Length: 416
Image (cartoon, rainbow, N blue to C red; front, top):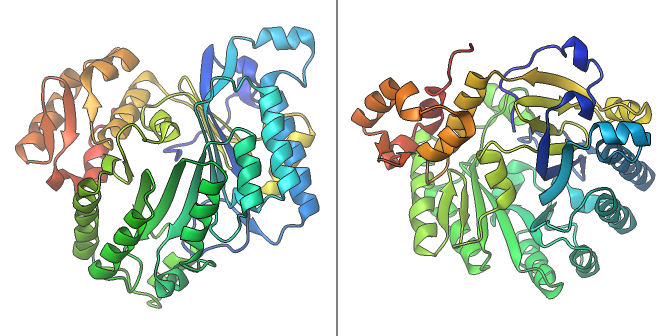
């Protein structure tokens, strides 16, 4: 989740604690594991390379210490009672990165078991771990499955070696089916593949072949992202210097619409702009984000949201470590959204879903009637053929999909 705006920590939260937050039941937990074998030049997520097993082991110690700050295990009984109104009972857990599967097996085992001891995970219906296809083994998959992890997400990105090279990905196309086979042998039934389109040098025919190969692997979920040139990433610099040429926007849009048609015909329907799943197999952790639910993140650069209070952890491993060692939450950016700002962001998120913005859901969450406060936007965008409006929902059209970010931006509300 990207922070759209940040403000300095208010005086009450110069050292944010759970006591400063309103009552809430947190059902989504994210853990950011920043270690990578190689930093891909398109990646804008916080990650670091060349870490020793010792530092990764120490990292697990600190993740569990951060969890203690939320669970109350590191505080006195009186202080524990003070924030019992903030309850973390994860229905979904997601380990992202970085490359979580780079953690040594004993460290990963201790991390999973440590979180299970600190939070009530009995109601967890989905526990996802991101994996690099080149960094898993059958024993590693079996360990995770036995510990309660039930969903793996593999960063395939492409099945063409030149495209992987263009992304600076360090695995072979054959690693993907091999990893999926190991995961299935270990007992995993819920599997996702990440793919990237509009890679420099990629054609529509090459992208179509990637989709065909992915479908042949028979996973229940696919995430297909258009390559973005995030500011200050190496790939953006290379583009600016003319060292690489981006795929033309018209071709990228053809890739997007072909993806929707092809995957739908194969039984994987879009439920969000970049995510496709078989019936009943959507990623529930994704849905928590798109519905504007509350969630807590552990680890450097992890972003959290609780009832309009939003913050991001320090995006540097050393700074995050120092905060944890001092028994304080590693907050770097914090803001308290006004009700109108929350409503505007919820509208933006919901409009990215295939089902769109449900008027009843929006009113339940915000107390506002979207048809009234967005009357002018709805009229203009439906007249332009960019949105569909029914008595129950507001959703993008196929034409609107081409400019979905711009459409969503029209629903930002002025601060009160």
